[in-house]
Image (cartoon, rainbow, N blue to C red; front, side):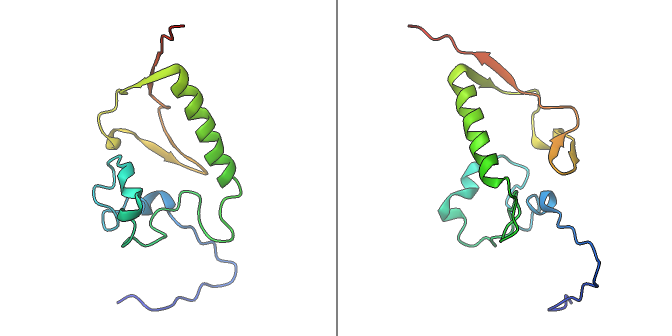
Length: 121
């Protein structure tokens, strides 16, 4: 039985395994499948708000959250205007070996294929 409360001694270090929480099958149907639809409002009604916290949460969340989101939008819009993204050599998410540090990233780098768009004038 899980107790209702815990006492954490002063000076303790508490780590929350954010990467692993977002991939638990008890919270997510097919947790390793890329499925953006799982974040649609109608699919979020019964999900606990802390099952997906890539930038942490609450008053002490990641100070770079807004900058990170803005940077990704700028980068993606720039890439998508000039390139077509082709399937990578990975067949499924489990094929990607990750290193978990301050940021989660693939051990062997980012393997994507871009094809330059031909823009006719």
